[in-house]
Length: 108
Image (cartoon, rainbow, N blue to C red; front, side, top):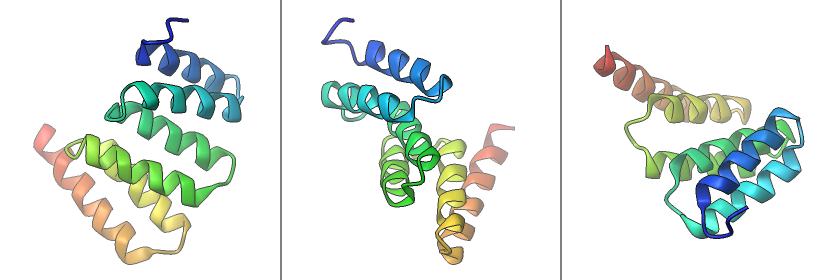
């Protein structure tokens, strides 16, 4: 794998994610972020991987980073809403749900 290509680490991480090697996926995603800290899709993917292993705090932190990188992505805000809901933070979940709905409506 090209050690200077964040997309290569991202693709490798996605392959591991699909095989349910979530810890391995997280490691590859972290390597991608070392090379490109603003790679929003990686932040989103790492959030999902952390959610799969039950680390909701890390998942939420990664999802917030994804929202900073891709503020107009309704899926990012949907993920944030779900994570906030799972943590029992209902007002924050509702806010993110509303943002996601607005963004999705703009796309239609």
